[in-house]
Length: 443
Image 1 (tube, helix red, strand yellow):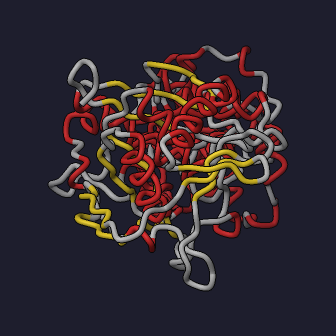
Image 2 (cartoon, one colour):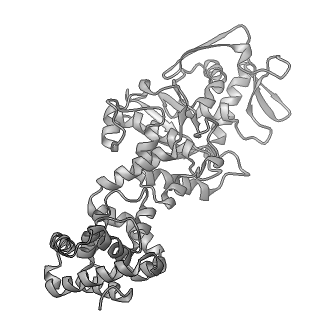
């Protein structure tokens, strides 16, 4: 265990690109493990690839973690700041005869006849012969490069030095690193250090059961943000890729996730990245949001669409979003579906006069004319409007649908919407009159 007897885990990305979904998944499970155990979550930047690593990518990765709410307790530490330490450790292995120099590089002598056994928290016991930990294509033992000829440490060496130096107690990473673990354990042994526990997370596959890639959709965390997915939803969805809180619970917040998370309950079965499931999770989080928070999440997309949000009272827009209910899988989609509450031009652009028959036009015109006469702006209430419309239809031998359908189209420009009388009530008497008169349904 660590110096304080508590779990210490780390997320160690390379700043060669934005934070992608696989990296976010690894970071999330490290964060959950640390928070559940009351331990420490460390951020380490593995930036020894001088050609591809950039400060901009490093910042983007940290921004992605912050967007997901994965706050780190220590770091960021950077490998580029520790090259001297790696050289000293490599020299100690050379002096003990366990490593040697070759053409400016330092190589570790892979011992033969040893067995490397470790109990993976997720995959169980794994046993590998030392001579099979690193082999050439012809099957002969291949020594492990520790320091490259340019002086940069290799992944397998730097990760051992860093995890030991940072008192990491549990290494949580993708299952594609299982093959690296025996090599790293050999280096731990050679240095006389205790190896940490290892937990390898399941691979993430696309819906076609192939390794997740760009062909399955967006791969960067920020792409999902820009598409209108909530950070709480992405957090929830990623947590479900290989784990569940139990009792068939699928929608949860980070508090419940931290309380229920057990690393040993993570499945080793590959997880499937299902966009339909993400849509479902996001819709449920949208529906459950506080009206004020939902308004704040939608507002940037309305502004992006060119709407003058500031001319409306926030309470009006909050009520519009409440009225929208579960419509819209994402904040962007919800903003698009609710455009008619902010702008009549959006309705005009969709309206097709030919879709409303002359007969329906006249019926609505007569019904709405009586509504305007009967109800003042202060009395323009959804329940009263619907009650009046039903009575008018019954008296005139008209079905309510014949009134509601053209009314919905004139007010929203859409064939599907929340209750049309609720829309009319929220828009207000004067705005409804303006829209209906524009299309020839009133006046």
